Image (cartoon, rainbow, N blue to C red; front, side):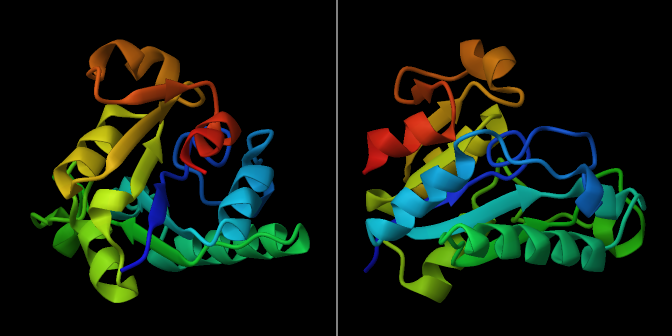
Length: 180
């Protein structure tokens, strides 16, 4: 089984912008590309796991999310980095239609991490979840992963809510240096 680092997207890889889906609004957090490249060079699988409730709320479509992910992947490739898998949860309890159904993928539930584990032969207990929200941390803990909260995005506000088992780092680059 392989080791992975699960990354939240908004506030961890890119600057937090409410309901981000347009390429023109996307902006990497400084050091994020380098951090992903370090993980790639270390042979660690990189999996993005992101809640995208804007789909359930009707703000944008699943295709919009996939287009943005392809753009991010292209930008990473230009720097010699890559993400091995992109997973997102389009559901929300107050969403519309089929998106309002209960799911096991919306963080803080560990569904996306467990799906990635099955699909990519990932050893969850030797893997790490990095994010800027308590929901990211709870998903990682529920999956049996090590957890790191970054202070970017909502992380500074969320820091008092995470327990002592979670490492806290300033940003993704410093978090990755704790992992590698």
